[in-house]
Amino acid sequence: DTGVSQDPRHKITKRGQNVTFRCDPISEHNRLYWYRQTLGQGPEFLTYFQNEAQLEKSRLLSDRFSAERPKGSFSTLEIQRTEQGDSAMYLCASRPTGGDTQYFGPGTRLTVL
Amino acid sequence: AQSVTQPDIHITVSEGASLELRCNYSYGATPYLFWYVQSPGQGLQLLLKYFSGDTLVQGIKGFEAEFKRSQSSFNLRKPSVHWSDAAEYFCAVGGRLGSSASKIIFGSGTRLSIRP
Image 1 (cartoon, rainbow over the protein chains, first blue to last red):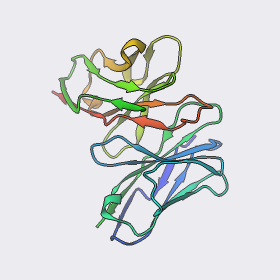
Image 2: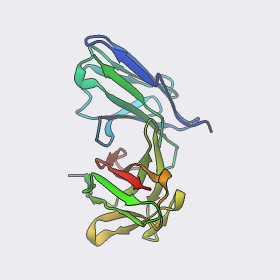
Image 3: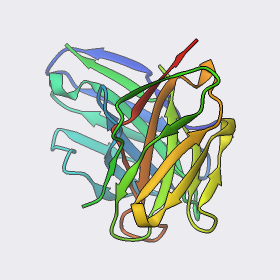
């Protein structure tokens, strides 16, 4: 069990550019979650996958955001036309089949200039 | 509405002193309750969780928490803090497996500083 991994750990981009983050969950965890954490706040739920199906999306997930989990393993989160307000830590978590605990990755810190 | 309130933004305690971090929640069904800790530059680490049964739960690093249904509270305690406990602590509530509410709702966190 190597834990949840996220790549990159840090990303600096200019406003208007597109960015993509990757999350690799713990092996055989069928549920995968994305959260966003801004400075001084707790993480806020963005979206959730069970295997490859995206089952829930927050209203925080504007149409500039898209998430995929094509083979039910790793997931990507893409932000198009980034805005300064997108600057945050993006956290990924996975949860095993039949389990109730989410295990978090180290996060990707995005800075939009 | 589902929510978690951590009324203390920042707490400073002396090393060796006892600690209590407050957490109140609002949740329509019987919740799962969690405490996570986040150190600078680190991900969220689960300290402990409550699902059912004994309302006093033990976690890692000497932490414990008590679920009080009548007060909608889940306060975190430690009898004697260490300098390495300085971090951000998040209380969270989640839905039971199989419910539609599978996401976790976090409080805004309490930053713990340790006075030497």
